[in-house]
Image 1 (cartoon, helix red, strand yellow):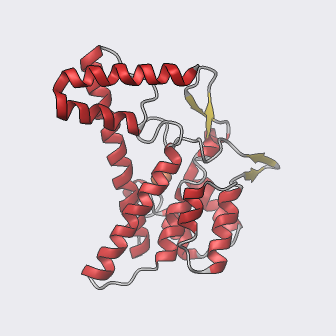
Image 2: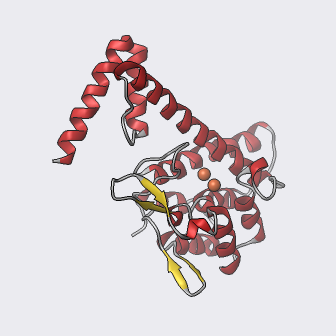
Length: 235
Ligand SMILES: [Fe+2]
Ligand SMILES: [Fe+2]
């Protein structure tokens, strides 16, 4: 079953054929190579990074939802402020699919931490998704958006407005999330001398907010609250 938040985003794609193809891949994001089928973590529970950003359960969905919001805001600016033209279908499909094969490269270790699969030793999520998009006959415009989403650090820089929007939105969301997680980890370390493992974005924002409102006392109280909440959820 496709996560309702991903379905709602996919429903914004107006071109029926593109929407159908995107949904088909989202519903079953497996990758076949050398006669072996790789499936990895389900999208619903997967992180969207192993260390820098969205590195907690559900991080993948959060990243796609937030990046879509940012990309659509950029589409509005381009169209309404700059009077440019954007193919929103390609932007939305690009965001939905840009990291679709990250989960196929992730595994959960016995101690609950994340690690990478054997497939990840040979292919990164960008190579995997490009191979699969081409194999499934997706439009070249979309293939380009996905190829260029890492900007200067990828195989090709964005050469279309749709690719530029997707790259900027992706960068903005990963930085937003990563910086907030880093700040919360720093506050936690300074306050109680150790970090909370697997800090989620919600917990990180709680810690940062408590510092703004109640200072270091607030940070300590919030960390205690998070620990109690985690303990009760475990039992
Ligand atoms: Fe990526
Ligand atoms: Fe991303």
